Length: 328
Image 1 (cartoon, helix red, strand yellow):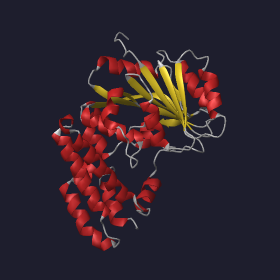
Image 2: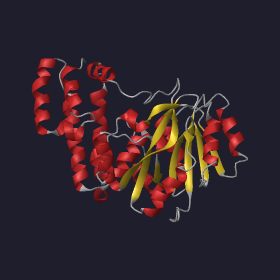
Image 3: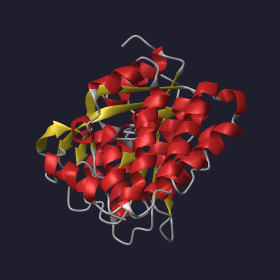
Image 4: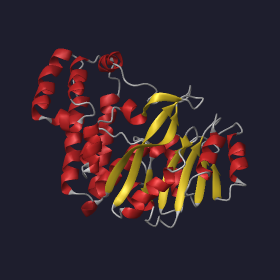
């Protein structure tokens, strides 16, 4: 590839107890066609030998590395925040201990950043594999039902409204310019780190995605995100499961996003701030819906007629059914 890649690239890798695949992951990083300049490992309170095994691979690997050890667990988002803040590269690539990078993951990501100065964050598809590394027959985008229409909208520069409605970027596939951390940190505890980084990047810059799987995303007993393609039965069960705190949490998250975007001033397009406020309004309405299903009908149908379910909620018309029929 003819484009000159950025001068420095850091990998932020987070580890936890039970990192049985850590050696395979690190070797896949060391075997990249373009190697990173730095690897930062942030271990979240492991009490097993995960760190020792990681260092056994890294020490002879020929790449500068640091290992940060938390005496007590910070949790996934705080651990990733610690890891990315400890990096020094112009491009930061996130990494989970269970996955395997395809040999050209960095090369293909860096080609995008090198040829597109306006690109802030990039995420990709992944091949779903089982604990033994055998393909499961579908991709991460399949499991997330990331539609062709949404992928095209992101490619067309409409990443903020698309991801505001439903944020599908997965941290294990993600790379971003370090400058994003100037506006994205601190990470709010109410948000997952990858969703927060992606929506802030979409607000202040450009986000794009690659349809090609660039990693193997491993599914095993301790990690079942996207472990199966959604079936009709699964979708119906989600509509009818108790609401719990879901709607309240969505409203809280939307409020935090609006506050952060408003604090960034001219860095955020007015239309995007307006959209975020629209998301906040409907999520607050949903959080206030009464327990009585009959009493929910009028407010839900009024919102349905306005089109805000389609604009701002993750599943559109399915969310209308959820709000009408879900038990408290």
